[in-house]
Length: 255
Ligand SMILES: N[C@@H]1[C@@H](O)[C@H](O)[C@@H](COP(=O)(O)O)O[C@@H]1O
Image (tube, rainbow, N blue to C red; front, side, top):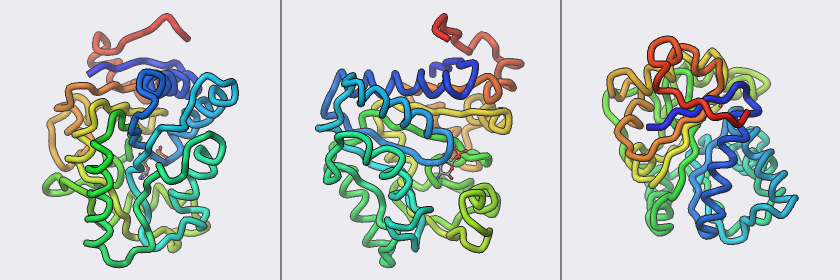
C-alpha cells in the first residue's frame, strides 16, 4: 500500500489524475473502473483539461462503473449514468459503446447482476479501479454487512448512505433505497486500485479502512489485502493517519 499526501482537494485530484493518465498512456486500451460521488469530480475535470490539450487519448479506453441507483433512468439527473456522461464522457473522445454502467431500470435483479458480471469478465478484468470512500466505509455501494458480497448485487442502501447522498436530491424521499453495485471480488481483482479521499469527515474512516481490522463492517478494509493499492488523500482526510502512522504517508515534493 502506498499513501500519497496532497495538501488540498485540487492537488489530490491532480495527483490521482496523473496516475489514471499514466495508466492510459502506458496502455491505451486500458479498462478503467470508474467511480461517482463528489470526490472524483476534480479528477475528471483534470483529465478533460489534459484531453483538450492533446495529452491523453481515450479512443480505445473501456470503462466499467462501480454502481447505479435502482429505478433511475440514464436521463435522470441523479443517475450515475447522467453524472458520468455530463461530468466526463461527453467531454472526451471515449466511444460510448465502450462505457459500461449497471442498468438502473432493469427490474430483474438477477438478470442485471448476471449481465454486469459477464461484462466485467468479458473485458478481461479491470486494469485500474478508481474508488471513493463512503462515510461508513463503503466502496461502490458495498455497504457494511455480515459478509463481503463477491460479485455484482442489488443492495439495500444504509440509512446513513441515503442521508449522505440526499444532498444531491431535492428531498430524502427521492433518494432510491436500492442500488446495483459491483462486488468486492470484482473490485479486488482489479490489477491496480486507486483510492481517493478528501476532507476531515473521511479521516477516521480512512484510518479504519487502511489500519483497522479487516472486516465486512468496514468494506474498504479489504483493500489492505490488495497488492497494488494507491491511496491519494488530502491533509484533512489523512489527519488521523498522520497522528498515528506518519511514516506511512509519502510526501512528494510536487505540490
Ligand atoms: N456510490 C458512491 C460511492 O462510490 C462513493 O465513493 C461515495 C462517496 O462519495 P463522496 O465522494 O461524495 O464522498 O458515495 C456514493 O455512495
